[in-house]
Length: 290
Image (tube, rainbow, N blue to C red):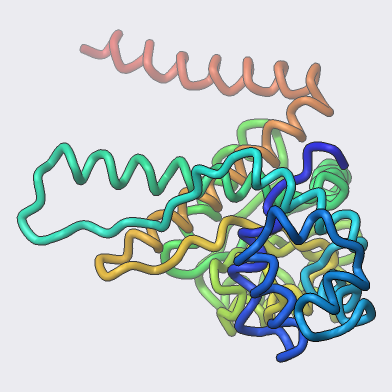
């Protein structure tokens, strides 16, 4: 647990949804993180006008195993006190400034996603994907771009995989699945009703379910066996937040794919060689026709 981070990021995202007493503790930690990590649970409760028991409840609400994990995550964040807010563009802004802002937002999104990552849940998701007879990725709007990217990647290593953004097509496919199959629901908010309903249908069919959402409890997490979280990139006026959330989703798909590829390295290399050979065959055919 020594390399844990993301405590401050998670608290910033979750604070408005916490009970009032837990909000007081989270606010104290966010305002005085250096002091907070030196306190016991009882002392922190007293400092924030609550109690040690409330501190423990806060840890649970944030999804941490206990107070020690909370302190380790905050301490990890303090080693990198370079966090900045997501920045939006301005009217008629200099192109170089736009490039810098978009790049900074993307880098922050990726870093925050990594800090939040639960390695045990990631391993569970990877092994579930490896053992699956078929995989369905579901996403609507911008999240469908992520679903299609996942389909393309896993198809290349001989996985039986489909991506859907059509409610009827997805539900038809899920109706014929069972305990050896996997459905992955993708939604930044975690509250896209269509995706949540499809995960609910999957659960009824005994299909294993994985969610990819921003951190916190949501409709998707309530129907998923395994929850993977991305950066809680904030929406901005020109929706650079939506751009950042897509980058976070794509980054997580890349991580899942590379972990699966590493676990099945020999098979992966063989399948990638086969797909490259197939593509090269058609390229050569096209050149010959010219």
